[in-house]
Length: 301
Ligand SMILES: C[S@@+](CC[C@H](N)C(=O)[O-])C[C@H]1O[C@@H](n2cnc3c(N)ncnc32)[C@H](O)[C@@H]1O
Image (cartoon, rainbow, N blue to C red):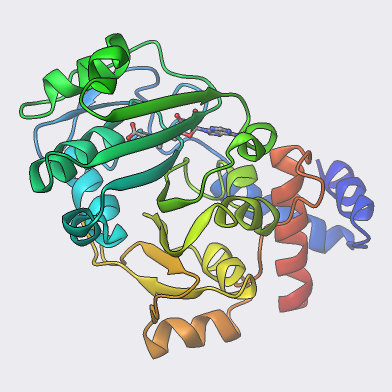
């Protein structure tokens, strides 16, 4: 393993000693493993709604502690600013990244239509593969959730257009030519699903934001916040839900701010460097090896 790590680091121009490679291996073992063992099962979350455990990533599709539906509403819809925007807009465009079971979109559609029944909603839902198992959503979302998967024509008649785009987002993001009012960024966590959080992909994704658009995610990871800052965005923290730290929001023009303590972490933590994937083709594990090699080099031996 140590030789493999040294070989990968070398590809990115980083020379690791054996001791440094061992430290990278330790970090990999710490992060790159399933957080939950109930693979492929449907489980109940804290607010009573259900979610799925991913076989591939060993992570739930939603926070078990926050509750699946609560997470969609409080971690994605509220911080996106869409509730206010819907009151005065004729049309809202959302890019839903890591569409998964579609919960984030369903919760958004339900509430935005309640606020403004005539509003048109266009959703681009991107995912590597759409899940075959779909836990049912509780009311008042159940009927809408069914239609998202089984009867999108009926939704179109209500002014709700959903375009699902399947494939590794690194190959599909470019097909979106619209600019979005909000981007929901909801892959698995950065150290298990690293190709989704690199500065290079975030540059592509955020280029699809309107000037007053908002990118929203549940993560508070330093590597992600640092990347967004380096891309020139105003970065802020959303309210914590089901855990101590809040998620992240950013915008080209809305003046979000992080606390001084968070800003300090971004300046001094060795983990506050972006994940990188220059040609958007790097295997996920190599993205992580490069990152941890850079972290190890920053901290010294
Ligand atoms: C946490 S789940 C999303 C939950 C979803 N937002 C919902 O409300 O049901 C993460 C999703 O990211 C998708 N994903 C992971 N890697 C991807 C990639 N490289 N390209 C596109 N989608 C990816 C997974 O297939 C999974 O559906």
